[in-house]
Amino acid sequence: MPLRVLEQTVNRSSPVVLLVAAVLVAILLFFVGSTNPATPAGYVGCLTRGAVLGHARYLGLQAGPTSSGRGWLLRVINVSVTPYTYDEEFTGPDTVLSSDSLKIAFRVHIVWKVRPDRVKQFVEDYSTLRAADTPDMIVREAYHNFLREPLRTYAREEVQKYKGLEIKDNISAIGHTLTQRVLELTKDTPFDVRSVVVGNIQYPAEIVDAVSKKLAATQELERKTTEIEIAKRDKEKRIIEAEGIAQATAIISQRLTGAYLQYEAIKAQRDTINSQNATTIYIPVGPMGVPIVGSLSLSGHDAAPQPAPRK
Image (cartoon, rainbow, N blue to C red; front, top):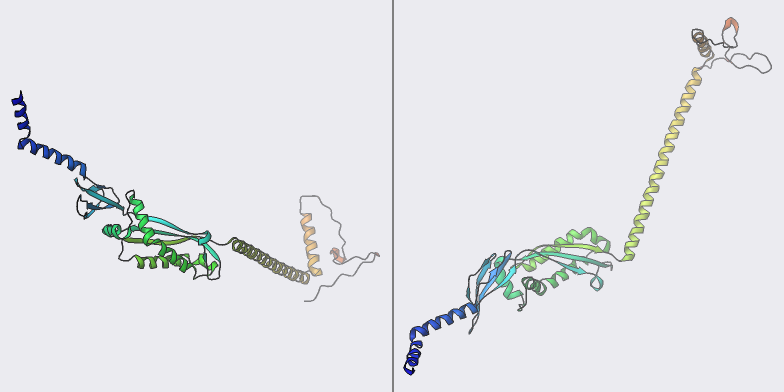
């Protein structure tokens, strides 16, 4: 028995067995220390390789969706390269005084993204990385470190150039100027700014009330002015109608001679006689049976016929 135990011990410590054991240990260590870091769509990954002894080193960028393949001590920092929209509020103690000392509350919207080819610069120079940071946290941290405060400063400076009630009419101009200043700031940086927009302008309550009252007074004045204009037109219309009636009356008065009235009376008698209706008309007649045209005296004496007016 002692000889067999010795023989087994020698066999176990042979070079082949040691080599197999070493390979198994190496494979185990590789799988424990290796990773296959992936980058999803819409992200660019900054790929690095760590080291047990020595320094980590940068390997390159990988645009998602992709992965690097399994490698020793690989790590990727994924950064979104899709647009972000951040809002900066200027309310409460952050309200801005206009050039005529009105407190103006407003909001600035900025749309920007990380340049895909500058993700390494973005991570190394603008981000503060912590172990628990997510990709969105990395981007927001960089924005706060570099862009946020200059943007707020530019917004205050541009709004302060205008009088309070002029700001709402110059929102586009303010936004354009802000965009140009931010583009100048971010030139040659990983920040790709698309637009800066100013909105949600809010004035103090007393100014809003004063403007509302002024607008109401203006509308009331316009209404009364319209009513006066309508009354003037009605007056002119009545004057024109009265003048037309007066002219028509004058013309009729000139044309209603005694002979014309006698003619009309004779024609009316003829039409009555020829009518199918049995009608009896009693009219005063003069010589030759001609109807009398004129006025009758209440004393029983016939009034003299009225001569026709001369033209």
